[in-house]
Image 1 (tube, rainbow, N blue to C red):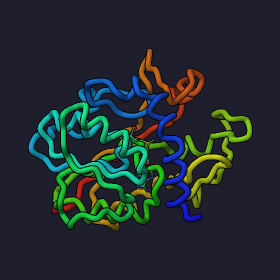
Image 2 (image 1 turned 90 degrees about the vertical axis):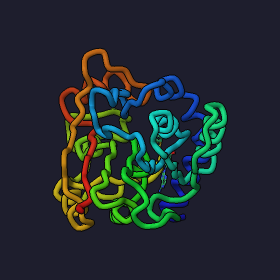
Image 3 (image 1 turned 30 degrees about the vertical axis):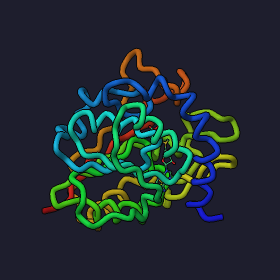
Length: 249
Ligand SMILES: C[S@@+](CC[C@H](N)C(=O)[O-])C[C@H]1O[C@@H](n2cnc3c(N)ncnc32)[C@H](O)[C@@H]1O
């Protein structure tokens, strides 16, 4: 089975449980990012979205895109999982909204070149698709000057995950050099790159780097994705990061 098929099967079979577990955490009425759902109004990653064409890669149940539509953006959601998109369709109907939801991999989106002002993901397809395939696709879909922003894991998080013990460690369990494709015994295939390689991928696809935001959970931060011990770990080492890169004009 290819990585693409394995991840599609994983998300189709885990979608209901995922939505049930995280519904309250990610379903709040304002834009929020990542593991600890930190407000966009504090982080200011996407900025003003009104009137912009915005593509969400790995939209899940479209919680983000629905809020973006309410702020005057023209969102399009792409996801590889039919079941996740069923949840998204139900959520759009409940919100009285109608925008495109596309069942496709982020590595190959059936839309024309230069269709979007913003391409983004919040622990979306960027974690589960090969950056050597999805970063060029994001570059193709963005207009000159367009923003690519995505949150995800970090090399630290991936290297310090002690899979047999099912916990974060202060020890490294994987090599940094060559970091790329990570497969756990019962999970989806995930991807992470060394920092130098991310920078080469961006520049090779015509992006200028604006910022790498390394997230340190603030006091009182809560998560349905991470335990209290893991949140403590993330106060010492970056567990989550947000890249902001801009396509050249
Ligand atoms: C962790 S969920 C996050 C979804 C949403 N951002 C949220 O916060 O709930 C990751 C999503 O990425 C989707 N995904 C995984 N691989 C993908 C790919 N190659 N192309 C498009 N979507 C993908 C999954 O189906 C899933 O809906």
